[in-house]
Image (cartoon, rainbow, N blue to C red):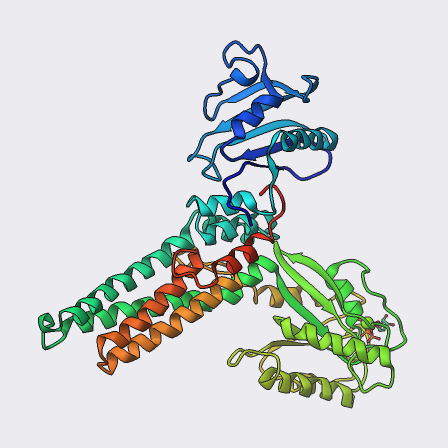
Length: 480
Ligand SMILES: Nc1nc2c(ncn2[C@@H]2O[C@H](COP(=O)(O)OP(=O)(O)OP(=O)(O)O)[C@@H](O)[C@H]2O)c(=O)[nH]1
Ligand SMILES: [Mg+2]
C-alpha cells in the first residue's frame, strides 16, 4: 500500500458500453489534472485550460479533450472539494458517454499527466482513512453494491448510514465510562465507598451491554440468509426424484433427470426466489454404498455442501417401499447433525419430502415421518408439480423477516467474530465483578471487550490493522 497522499484515478462506472461513463479522480492534484482534459463550454465563467476555476458541487458542461487539445466527447464535470467529498480529498468526476475507448483514453491521459491508477477499493479505503466512514460503513458500500436481495440492500443501506456503528459506539462508550470508574478505584482506593454501590450500577450497565451484544449475535444467521440466500440441499437415495424436485423448484430444467439411478454425480447449484427471498438449491448425487468412484467423489463433495446448508431436504420415493438406504440417509443426517457439521446447539433443519405422489402410495406416512421426526413433512409430485407450493411456504418460513423495530442485524462474519470476542471478555468482566475481584482484573476484561468493539469499526486498539484493512478492501472492484 502507498501512503495515500498521491492522486488516483479510476473508472467509477462498470466497464463496457453504457449511457454514461464516469472517471473519478481523487487527491491533492485532482483539479490540476482535470483542467488538462476538460474545458467548460464557453469558458467565460470558468476560464479556460489551466485557469479554470470550478465552483464546488456545480455541474459543468464542456468538452473532454485529448492531450493535444483534440475533442473526444461532450461531457460534464463535477468538483467536490476536500473534506466534503466521498474520500475526504479533492475529488473531480468527469462524465462522458459510456464508451470504453473514450474512458480508457481519458484515464490513460490522466495517468500520463501524473495520476495513479487506483487500487481496488482505494476510494473507499481513503474515505475510511480520512475518517469519512468507519469500517462497518466501508464494508456496507461493498454489501450494497453486491446486494442480491431487496432485504440485503436495506441491511447494507442501514449499515452505510451508520446504524451499526452508532450502536457499537454506544456500547464502547459505556465500557469506557465504566473503565474510567475502575481506573479511579485503582488510583484513589481511599475514595471508594465501602459499600461499593458504584459496582452494582456497573454490573447492571455491563449486563445490559452484554445482553444487547448477545441479541445482535443471535441475528447473524438470519442476516446472512437475507443477504446471501437460504441454502437448501436436496439429498436422498438414487432415483427418488431429487433432480426432478430441484428442477421443479427452480421452474426450469436445470439438472439431468433419468430413469437410471446414479444420474447426478456433481453437486449442482442454482438459485431461485420465493416471494423475493433468495434460495440457493443444491442437487446432490444419490446417497448409497457404491463401488463407483465418480459417484463416491460426488457424495464426498455433497457432504461438504451439507456443512453449509441451512435446510436439508431428504427426498423419498413414495411409490416404492422404503429401503435400507433411506434409513441410512436419515441416520447419517441425525449423527452429522449432532456431532458433525453443526455448531453446538444449532440443530440442522430437515424436511422429509415424499415424492412421486402421482403414483399409488407405497410408503406409510407414519413411517416416512419417523425418519426424521419433529421437522417438516411434505408430499409432492415433482413430475406433476403438486404439493410444491406448500413446500415453498415451508422453506420461506425459515427466512425470517427483519423486525421493523430497532433490531440491527449483522451478516458479516468479521462483525460476528468481533462481537463474540467482545461478549466473551465482557462476560469474564461481569463474573469478576460478581466475585468482587480487584479493579485491575475487571478493567483488563473491559479493555479487551472495548478493543474488540473498536476493531469492528476500525477504531484504535486495532491489532492487525494492515491485515484487516487489506482483507476488506481487496474485495472491492476498481473505482469504488
Ligand atoms: N411418476 C413420477 N416420477 C418421477 C417423479 N419425480 C421423478 N420421477 C422419475 O424418477 C426417475 C428419477 O428421477 P431423478 O430426478 O433423476 O432422480 P434423482 O434422485 O435425481 O436420481 P439420481 O441423480 O440418479 O440419484 C426419473 O425417471 C423421473 O422421471 C414424480 O413426481 N412422479
Ligand atoms: Mg439426480
